[in-house]
Length: 273
Image (cartoon, rainbow, N blue to C red; front, top):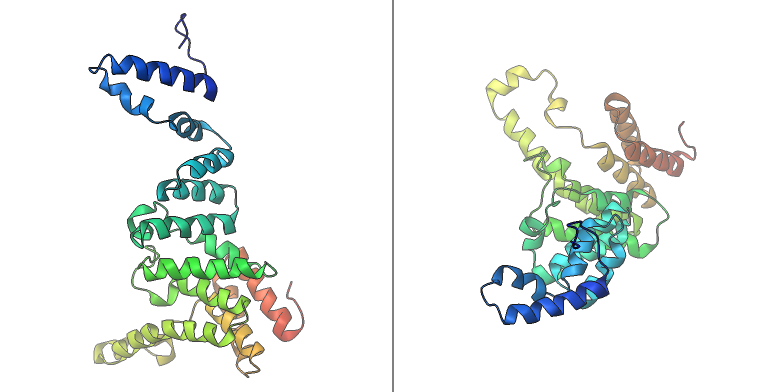
């Protein structure tokens, strides 16, 4: 604030000079402790600029170079997320988790239930291999920490981590591993259906026992289809047909429909309109 009571932004050099002068004055006036946290922090100006900047990435780069803490990596990860730099955001999240430990994914990350970083990386074909490896590490780390999609409690067949992991494994040419990952989510789905069929009261309400087992999500079916095809197994066309049926019935996202077209082109040799 100037002598006329008007506020104006100051540059970093001006702030640093004023900070040093104020720190000297505070040494002579211990009662003014409310200001001490600001003047004792050499990075205070940088932190405040980040809060107000519409393009904070260069500022975060400087902050992390001076203070490589998990909090700063988390902040830059969010800025990278907003800029849609998915691979760099995943890398910073993994570094934040390395510094913080697995609890970062549970209580250190305000966006723990957001799986968009992994989805954006694995849905698109043709990315560099290291980006798929990064997406795989990112999803596995969140999964190990126990992060689930809160919108789908208890529905193991809908776990976004498994879909990201299996699709990343497919992109990396690990077709058998991808199928094994998807089989892990078959177990609770089939177990739930078996429990339902054990009750005679439930049996009275089920006319067709095939409906007791929920249809796998379309992404699961598409990944299975492409893996079966790459492994020379005969189930590929059955799975892609099932995925097409689910998406025609339920709609699905643009990413899911694009993935289906990729599978159709791979397996049937043609893309659907």
